[in-house]
Image (cartoon, rainbow, N blue to C red; front, side, top):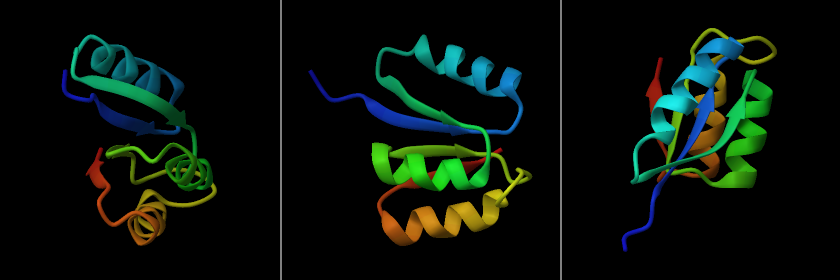
Length: 84
């Protein structure tokens, strides 16, 4: 069996994070490995969890999604970022 696609969901709205995680959780080839509520947490969790994909909200508190994306890609160039 092939490994699952590891996804980190980053959005400051709880309902959006929960909805995306629930939707992705229905896919057999996807594993939501974490959820982040701000840009700083996104960077920290991306480093800790090493997701293949990050669903990133651009407008977040503490650090913008754009800044967080740059840091994540610097630390893990193979990560793919999908901007919400």
